[in-house]
Length: 213
Image 1: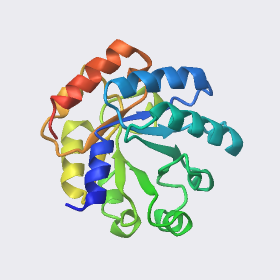
Image 2: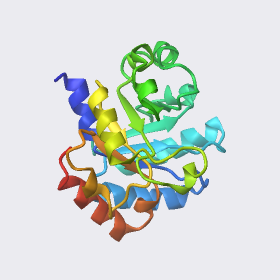
Image 3: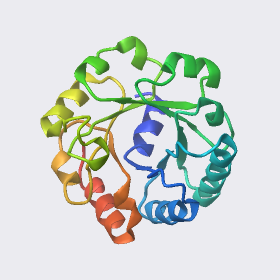
Image 4: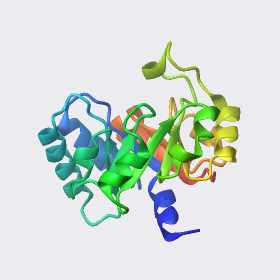
């Protein structure tokens, strides 16, 4: 396995996605709890913030991470992802094509992509420039209610088996069900609300550490 893929797999074992509330202080509290639990990947998803504000938030999160080998990604904004405080960008399926993002960002920045179906996973040309994919929702989640059905554990297992790059599970995953994903082949889990409480974050991280893919 190449060094880059090893680094990606190590980082995405647990990913914190910000809730999009525009509250930097709350984010830093959640990120601090996550770092204490061993989380090493953060996706800044704050669609209401300007580029200037995203850069300020990214710099604050980078400073909080300190010397830890943590990765900070920004959602969608390829222009902002070029800044030194960010390690890359996470794209939605309908956003800028990963190949175009790679051309703009160069070879060093990480690129992640949200996928929801087996058909999307079969689009090898679209996935080729990516370092990882985010697949879900695995379980029912309020943010996807009425828009996307839960894929379930069987769906996650099938997706991970069909994917040639690290696949991160997302959607309704918390400290109560993370262990149920054991053996599905996923590279890690992403979550939002679980990191807003230090005790829940600790249980979640423990469930992941005891849950080989």
